[in-house]
Length: 286
Ligand SMILES: C[S@@+](CC[C@H](N)C(=O)[O-])C[C@H]1O[C@@H](n2cnc3c(N)ncnc32)[C@H](O)[C@@H]1O
Image 1: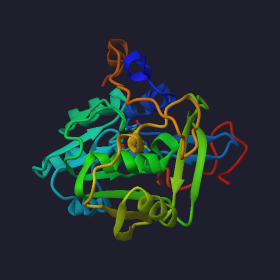
Image 2: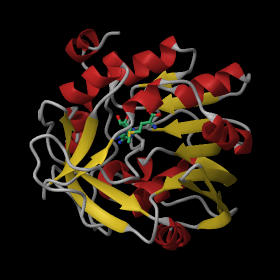
Image 3: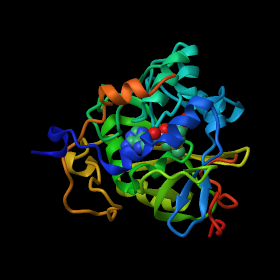
Image 4: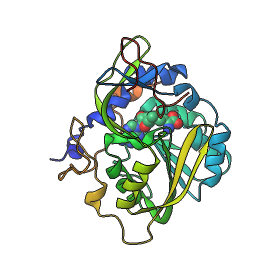
């Protein structure tokens, strides 16, 4: 029986349902961090994510074409703004409170992982990986392949990158100001050069690169060719960080919350920039 059939939620998905993140979403702000195993930390800008779109976001949305899939939409400021513009947009996020907020603010959102079966697979005109979401699953090459299978041939992917020539794979835990920690999960940070290298392998071509208010973005265009092989787009799976080129991978899994999880959910600087430490941590970002 596959993990999907068994209803198993991979660690890197379950980790985003932890209390520190959920409570920050309910409050509408942090402080919240991704804490690395060496104690250094990356801030998560939950307050900005829970707010309205700013001018940088608005310019990003101007570039979107047709229907838009926001992968890791969080509380949904982007899908809500797109809906306000009369655009067809869907956010996906495994945290039920994030999805509840996105829906309450007028966006369309589903409680799913990027690696779950999704509506309109192969038909999205634009996909978004912003606010550090290229780190989802800790295997960016596989994520890029998965998104390639979600957008149409010739479709667009807009990725927000880290500053500089960064290519980091790490194990992190979500950490709040009281030092409470979620479970460990794999994450990644990529600067523009590393992203472009991986994108080429996943059959994306560079369409544009820009910077606005110290945030960096890359627009990629999917090659108008053969569809992505399912094996290239499967999740890394497993409970610990997997190498980028893992030979085996489980079948897609569903992450819709259980009834208990759904009942429990009510309701910067961003993770691209290093933090000056995390509560309980003696170390700075290194
Ligand atoms: C760095 S935060 C960015 C949040 C965000 N873009 C926003 O506007 O609030 C990463 C987000 O991705 C979500 N996420 C984590 N794993 C995911 C997965 N496998 N598929 C889709 N979203 C995921 C998390 O729940 C979290 O909301």
